[in-house]
Image 1 (cartoon, chains in turn brown, cyan):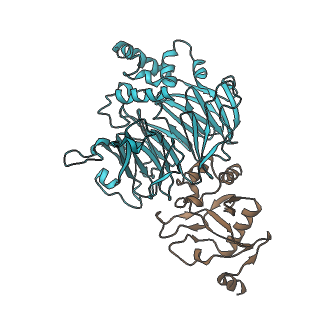
Image 2 (tube, helix red, strand yellow):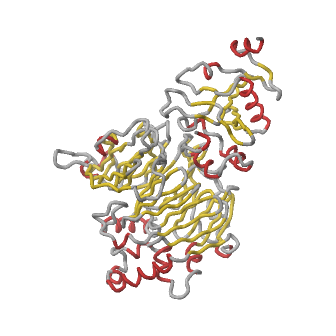
Image 3 (spheres, helix red, strand yellow):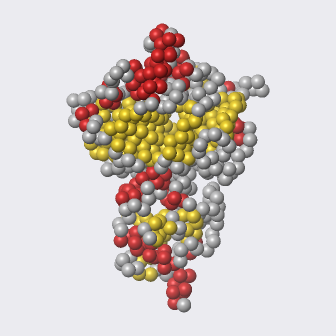
Length: 152
Length: 418
């Protein structure tokens, strides 16, 4: 009950890694212009915590981003779907992008096929490749915005 | 005839070949530079010098417009060359990095901070798109230099892109959702927008640029050359021609039918020089592009002519998959699928390269390596050499760019200037 109120109120919560996090409801309310989470709120937090703990963090123009995977048995699993109004037919998404705001993080399913800003930094993709989560050719495909297992 | 193949084992990311040097980037973002001429010459044995030279070092020798044309035009010589090429296509060459250590001219950190998204070499400079923008690093430094490529690149642009192609002193930058840009390499201006359409990759078609995407219809950003009448308006130019943007031409106008959007039919269009292609699950439609009619089309002289199609029924690829990339060379056309590459050669054959494929590259602007196809996979680079095209009637061929004497001479002249 209390948790449900938190989900909807937009209040920030403290995560286990010492960072505060806020659920962005635009990515859960069926907004046709926004990618939508399929995983639940707690899983979203878990993906964020894991990505931050693994240091899958990049910086660009004084902003900090963390890039997450929904790992189930060490395999990147679906965590969201593309926005209905995106040029792409509705597809699953397996990468999460978290953005550091003013002392609070928020995130969304990253559709690298449609948005060039939703491509993880090559160093993070290399890390995923080294850990065996993605293939070498998928680093290239993500960077070149071509389809691969992370976009289906 | 099967392509000739040379394999180098290693964990590579990208490759370039330029003026006798092979550039290989590995997954540690180190750049290895090899003396390509010496490496291939080390393979000469048992009368293999001629076919290996033609296959890997001097593809221009095969065409009748080369500087040895009188010899190569002779039918008997043709026959011998073909037999020798067939012979070497039956065997392959495979090396480890250790095997070719003697040919390494240098190893250094890549001048670019991260694994780059795409690269091009032009006039002794390497251009690279990275996660932080577009960079330029001087390359092809003399042998006495420790570093054959400048270590500190110059940043040309903050923008992001997916691929680059250079021609005629201008870089075409495909920037996906940001559109298509072009950057003149002879002045210091920022890249200028050409189109805001989604562009995954782009290729030069003479003065024009063909923008391609698997998410949205392709298009031709049509440009044409105009004679400059007012010399005073451009006093610093040696030439009297300017390249002028005409209009954006839809794929529908070019190919004569409307593909599905978004591209649920798996179609993709692309093109280079006079050949424009649209592939779907069953065939490849072919249009001849006539640059000279771009600026003054009339009922009779239109810039696009349908010249046929290629049936994919016997191509041995899963045609139901979405094509995600394409290229064109003299020897044929390349279709990239998620798990393999299809090469449709100018002699109407198919050649399938199984993936997963990290990177593939052809060199249509080169003079000596236009028969090369570089394919990087998990543990190696395969350097293919396709050698049937020089026997094909250039005007009537469907797959591949037409080789003409004028263009050949122009490109050789450009190469000498470089």
